[in-house]
Amino acid sequence: MKNRILLLAIMLTTIVYFSSCSKDENVNSLVQQAKNKDIQLMRSEKNTTEAKIIKFFKRMNIVREDPNNSEAENWNYSADSTVWYIEAALNYKYAYKWQYKGSANHSDLYNTDSSFVNMSANNETGDYNIIALQISYDIFAVKLENQYEKTDADSKFFVMSDVVLNNYDNNSLSLVQYSVIGKANQLIPQSGWIWGLGMGDCSGGHRGIDATYIIENKLINSRAIHVSPEGYWGFVNIGAIDNGNNGWIFPFDVPLPNGVTNPTPFVNYLLFYADKEPNDPDPCISNSNIAWYANNILSIEASNKPVNKEIVYTDIKSTITGSRPIYGLIHQMKPSYGESVFFAHIIPID
Image 1 (cartoon, helix red, strand yellow):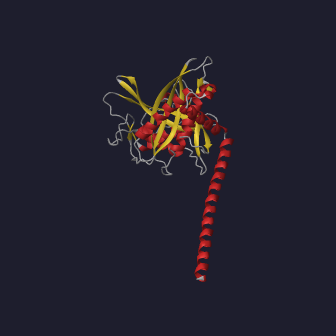
Image 2 (image 1 turned 120 degrees about the vertical axis):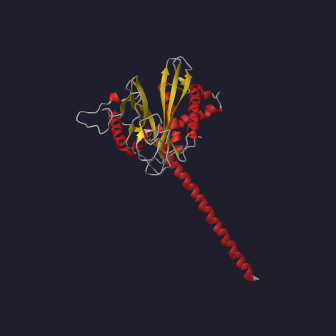
Image 3 (image 1 turned 60 degrees about the horizontal axis):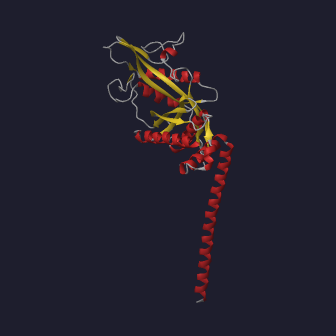
């Protein structure tokens, strides 16, 4: 009997001991998680850009839940600040939410879209209240979510949201969101492609894409990809160049430099240009010539890069110019640059 009581006591002590250890481990784990969060918070607070964006999200959350909040009447923004905060918030959230999860060797295509909002000033100074900013942000976010959902790819990722001041006076402003979603891990044949208009490859297959898509695909392999295990990278102050054409660069803006030999059968520009009479077939650009145009675009990007900014994305489009009997078939490009910023993203913002 004594032996049974002793054995029972030993078992009870052992259970209590292991239970205590398990509890201590859970407590230690929670303490460590709290410490890690505190470390991230300190890093975030040191990053004044992220701190400003988080404060903006908090204000939007407050007025979204309570538009009559008494503090809101003091939260007003200039036209320039309105653009900056809405754009920064969109890029902050979606660069985190839809991070790239494709293969290390990029083979990506892109889906671009645009959306619009109008805002009214709330006082004589022409400032815009946080409620107007929150409503405009939500409209752009919904458009972006819809674009993402409609993008047909197994692995999709966020590229950028460029918010542009489209029109402005003392009483109102109009904003445009130029947004890009990437489609990772695309199988793209290494063949020649029709110059544009989604006419496919030179054999008549793969309708819906053309040489412009393939050039964009080739550009991604020359981009600097920032990676960090403790956070993520995003862009702020995104914008195109100010060249009087809304940032678009055309072939006649970039003639082939003296002494440079054009390996293609097309006109001597760094961007594609070909004349076409009504009965001529649409030009096919070989894979090697596509690579030549892609390298030219990289040099154009570099020559136009603003100080302290990086290339975010370059949109390549096909366009028909001129009139009968001879048309001009061209590629035009619009590079967008931004300031890369490291974010800790320690506060949920959904």
